[in-house]
Image 1 (tube, protein in one colour):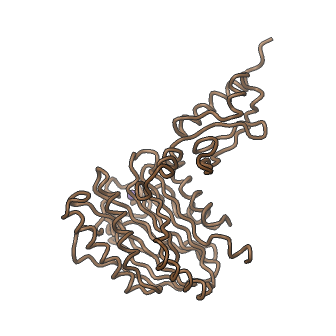
Image 2 (cartoon, protein in one colour):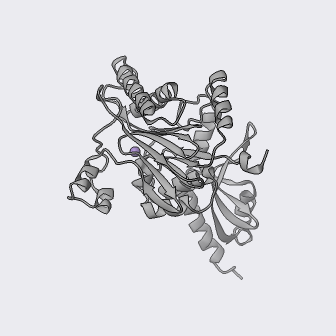
Image 3 (cartoon, protein in one colour):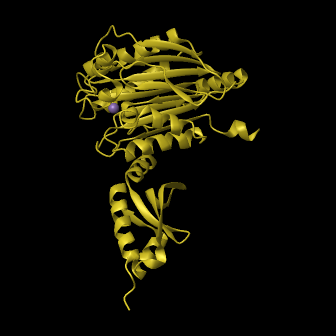
Length: 357
Ligand code: MN
């Protein structure tokens, strides 16, 4: 097996952001089907809606990159959310956006409802595939608002179409033919509402693998304020071997559903709870004699490392008080990234203070 084939062709990542306590987004990356859903409804009902929608989508997805088949799966997802609310699961009026893509080689079928987006990075240039179903997008189309104004408009989160509200909902469909080496991005508005298309283009085209790119995009949204849940799927488009795809979908029918669902709660159990806990935390640790900032928690749990380097600093550990320096060797846990950076600021002033004679 070549190294290339082992390299993952897709990466997905979802984060609650820095303001919301619940992640109502859901993500699905189960080749050849990829999707993001941004749940609406509050009181955790949005989380129920986005999870149900993606589950129904997967159960009803076509075998091939067929846009009409994918639109039918989106309608099934719509019916599922409406029925669930009527049956008392979640809440009346809950809903979700859906941007789903079926990828077959360089052929992409997309079904789309709401203000999540699909983008294509073509030869290093970013092109948006989907049109938002939102109040501000209508205003932009009518010429009464520009893109930049839309990003800051107080009603920017009002969407005009969603799953879960209208039994006759129709998804927009797109069929795109890309080239090998192009990249597909699916994201919720927690990404494109926080960073602009130029920054998305830069990170998507910076040569990192899909997983690292997904993380980097989410990190950029968090650094820009992380006002909303943020979810990202990055897919590298290749001249896929159809035999491999066929084998993969056969495996999918035979095996338990191989979900990569990065949504809170769907994967129950201690590992997930720990992962989610870790994801909101931060710690400081010595690395090559300098203070480094990590997201996560130090050490490992059940063989899992739950730490992601966020930043290096130029602060020498040796310049800090002895008890701080010794704690930094195993890691000093912080409430969150913000507290970690506050600690870094304190260390910086401690380190720059001249030694008392
Ligand atoms: Mn959102």
